Image 1 (tube, rainbow, N blue to C red):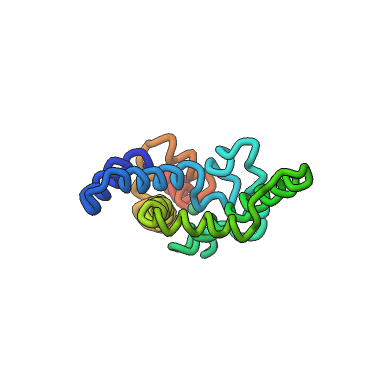
Image 2: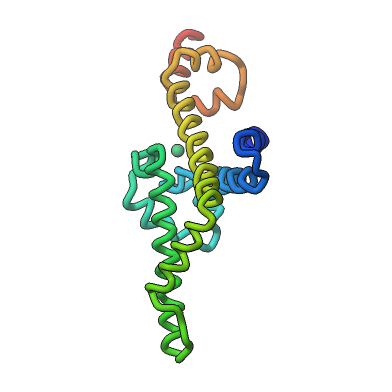
Length: 188
Ligand SMILES: [Zn+2]
């Protein structure tokens, strides 16, 4: 899904902004969101597993947030929340290394200087940051909409139609569903 829509995202941005670098950042954000930084980090999912050895980073996130709650699956809120959450970890690791460096007697940046550096970077590259955020948000949106389609489909009468077809994948998925039961009772 992510890979299929990528050319449209890249083409759309290029058309809208006429800047190849921004198209690149939007696409990157979209890809990252679709592969490892998506809303389903709030449960044991492909996104979660792709973090490999670092997956435990998302454990507290999963504990704190109910699957598909507004905090992970709400437009804008979800993406902002994940950026903020990851930012906390990055900050924590950064502080840890800064502490070590200071203990070792190295000259390091002060907190104030670090904040200035980040602020300056955001100010001078604002379009890039915004483009990346838009990409992340677009990726999340495509996830929300597919979540929505799946749950709507599950509740819709269309499902009976598909279940009645002889697709083995669909029928195995529907093993415990009421749809299958009605099929069974009909065939008796
Ligand atoms: Zn989801």
